[in-house]
Length: 322
Image 1: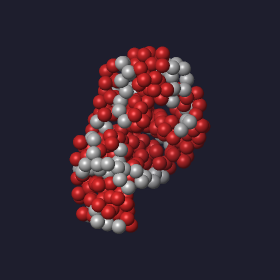
Image 2 (image 1 turned 60 degrees about the horizontal axis):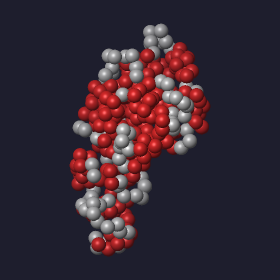
Image 3 (image 1 turned 180 degrees about the horizontal axis):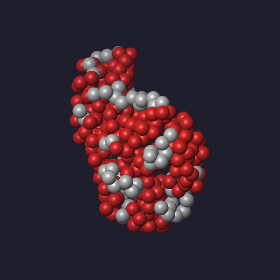
Image 4 (image 1 turned 180 degrees about the vertical axis):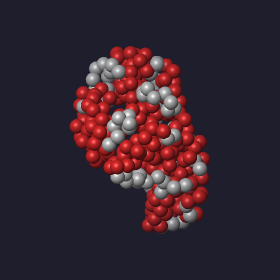
């Protein structure tokens, strides 16, 4: 299994690539989209991001804006009539027309910084991201019906007044809310994101990841496949994968328990993180998580019914698991 690397498109290849993306499914659709994204990123998309970047007040909000622009780009590519816009200049002008609504006001609405959030599409976007941010912060999903503290904290994350929360819940709909809860709670791709991000730091794996049995089966398979015996021992002990009730200890104490000096312990821990961070399987799940966000949201809110978001996502995940 190989990690996909975006192809460097030439200008005379762009129109044909858009046509191919519109017809493709699964991994092929994702790959062509990334080719087109890389082509237009510096030529067009970055300038629109810079227009709205300051609306985001922290890293999470800026990431939401990046995802939003990717979604709008994806929807525009699906919409482009390549028989009508059959040159790179015409396609670029078409995209600029499509992007007229990307401005500071619409960015503020996406982040829930306008009152009220009128568009159901934007309400769903903001609500979904707020659920994930709440889970990241409190390590659980909120009880928005009975828990007053959860309601207050969730409203703050959405940047709305607490008294407006019921209106938002009505707009999103109970069925959609249950679907989002289920998806976030069992998000294997999202767990891969958390894992790979944590591996870049010096922190142990978060409890929510360690307690997810389904994902831990996947992780342990990679641990036994990629790591040496010493690397496995160090990584498992450091992250309490063998005993979640073990009292917290320093690296020096853990090294002594394993019969190693600190330098040896540290080396094995760093190598374990490096190898897992380069795991093809985990990278594929990470890639799937990014495409899941872009493709699923875009297709849920587009008129192109011949494209099924679930079919595309299932195909991406199926190929990632091979």
